[in-house]
Amino acid sequence: MKQATEIKKLPQVVSRKNRGRVLISCPDRPGVVAAVSHFLYEHGANIVEADQHSTDPDAGRLFMRIEFDLDRLEDRMETLKKGFKGIASEFEMDWEFKRADDMKKTVIFVSREDHCLMELLWQWQSGALYTDIVAVISNHPDHQEKVEQLGIPFYHVPVTRDNKKEAEQRQLELLAQHEADLIVLARYMQILSPEFVSHYPNRIINIHHSFLPAFVGANPYRSAYNRGVKLIGATAHYVTDDLDQGPIIEQDVERVNHRYTVDDLRKTGRHIERIVLVRAVNWHLEDKIIPYQNKTVVFG
Image 1 (spheres, rainbow, N blue to C red):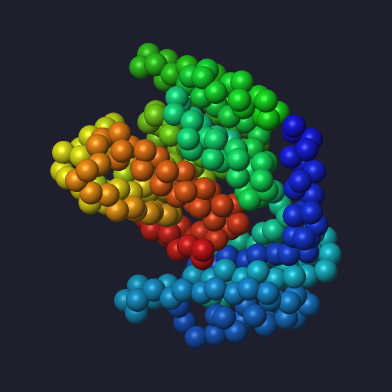
Image 2 (image 1 turned 135 degrees about the vertical axis):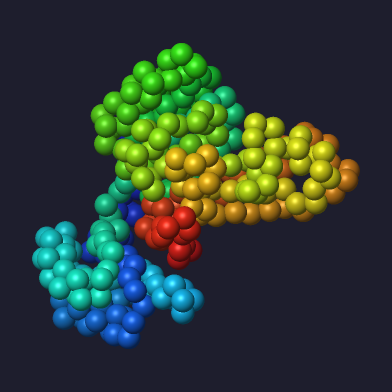
């Protein structure tokens, strides 16, 4: 099964060959776009997609994402990076060059509920998520068989109040072993410590089972029902030290009414959670997100 999945991804690797990306955040001033475009032109690159966003005049920040084609990109990437340093310094840029065919390695954390896990696995199998899911880590053994059937390693790491530090150390060891680039919390019902989060800044994506900041906590659908809500939603965000306060990547809602029971609200919410999480993960994998302060610019 694992081999078949790899074969499905080969056409995507070929189509991404020689496709590069540059992500930029800098003070907004005249000449930035022209300088970047001219630099790419001078190096023989063809710009195929360009997005930019300027913040309000008081903040004065420019965000850019450019995709370009350049022959023998893998061999020339270091030359590009070295040559770009002058422009980056002149315009005070935070910047990254990336190759589109550089497939990120993803590890999924999950507890007992499997709807987000299964959606991610299905999207991955279909080729809709350009990533290598290298492991699934869970504090319960429930999903081991379905994960291992796909050729993905499954690790059961129990977490209790008494062993949390040791459990996180084991998880960090597994992440290092698999060289994880991205961690996805697919309804992982444990709070990660600041020490854990510090190892993967802006590389841990969580799905929150409500439309933040409303109805935080363990039972949001009961709280939503008690308030008689007319919208149910979900929020995907990067994980920070502050619980459920990290930069928001994506949100969505669906209209409900007084006839919905708590179970109806929960079913609706789970459906939205799956969609929102996949969108957020995909945008991260495609380098379409630029975090800044506690917000994100998403070139979706």
